[in-house]
Image (tube, rainbow, N blue to C red; front, side):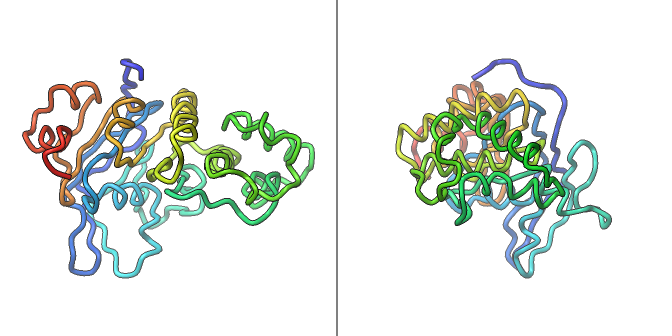
Length: 257
């Protein structure tokens, strides 16, 4: 973990509230997520952290009866503005899910899928993108001799790194990770954590995790959520060692959650 925190905000939530029908799930969230760093969302189940993560690339648009008030700014532009190109938004702000979800096709085609959708057709270009993305995801050496084999034959940890490589192939700016290691064994978890550390030099990463030790190990800033409210946000080291809110201290010391 680095002590140097980037000062420019890549993403900013302003007065963000979200409702599922009549049920309010997020309450007036104001949060800055610095560029070139890792921001962790922590809190007990059902506290709103994954809901907030999905607002950052409008994944909640896919859920019926959702109402969102407030703004989410990416590079100063409100992504909820009526003229937003949501397809382009999700290319720039990609997501890795809790369970690895490779496509039932070859390793190569998993990585080439996004670039092909965005108009890249030349095999030489696709070859370069596939190799670069797998290199960035620390997977190339493990799969370079079986690119034509099904991605479903990879281990869980390899599948999750493949999903990260699939995101990187379309050259995003932000990586959203929703508990990306919760389904993985400890060795695979460590590899994904090491990978996030390497990637933050080029990407802004926001990670939801139930694992407080993981947040402490890899994030630069941490936000603690409880019942849809952001209780506290700050530099990770300070939040874990000297929180300003008693509820934060109670949670990180295991008194609830």
